[in-house]
Length: 395
Image 1 (cartoon, one colour):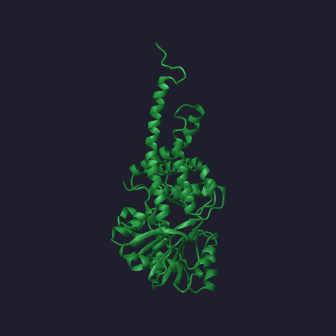
Image 2: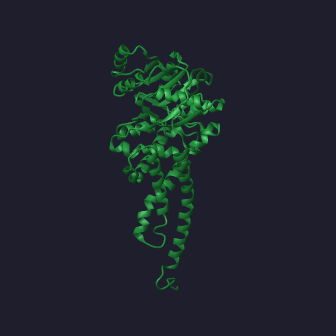
Image 3: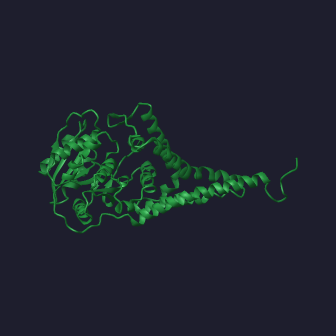
């Protein structure tokens, strides 16, 4: 059989393989450039909380708390100095087994607006946080309800600025996407993937222009709603069994014809979500698979992140080591992903070195998603703070 090798050139079959791979690398680059454009749009055009127009009204701050002795004190210190716009500060003690009730009582002695809402039996079919928020809303008297997680830290006059923003934009719901406080190595390496996950796919500026319910987005750590509209749309009772109740509530808000937005709250609220690798794993495991509306969208997400955001980092070193004309074909894809990470890190004021560990963080994200799917599919469910949940996508 004649040798297909031409002197000074690669064998013919390698040339053909290289050509095919170059085509594949080019096709891979197209969706990555599109997603890069989405990230750039978000970075440049998504507004922050900046309104100055005044709106009259009184806010009830509502804090669900379950075993939050390490967070609650600092949270109450911040909300207590938010000014006269705060009518009351209600904390629901969700069957805490630590010093959470004691901390509430101590702060109530120095601020008469602070009031403890005692534990009630969790009804069947309710998520713990959802029921706590519903109990708080029922007890509140303010015109506006500000749902706040115990690990959230408000900046000076943050509540008044949010109230001003809803007046300037004619909203009845506004959520602040918080800045992330990142302490440990694992926090800095893994938690920025939350912003990467959301803002590579979600066109935030488009939500300002279109009322499409699918564009509803909220972050449950900081959510301000008008009280009468909250009860008119069903409140947390309408999303009682949802793990991602914040997003479902924002979507429901739009379905009912109300105006709601999620804005960049980097200068308004800061959250330290989790402190250790095990907390990160358990915390996101409970949300990941249930956060998808269908099995199809879940597996499409897994395919997208595997093919676009992980495999270029896996194959690029191998191809470069082997050499050949296709050796550098995947580097533009690698560059696109790292540029997305860089743009988001700059927008959210995060340190830059974790960008270099993107393959590790991406592999962790995919394994976490598969673990969440496996536990829900197998009936084990997911656990958080002593409670077990068995959620499934809606379709």
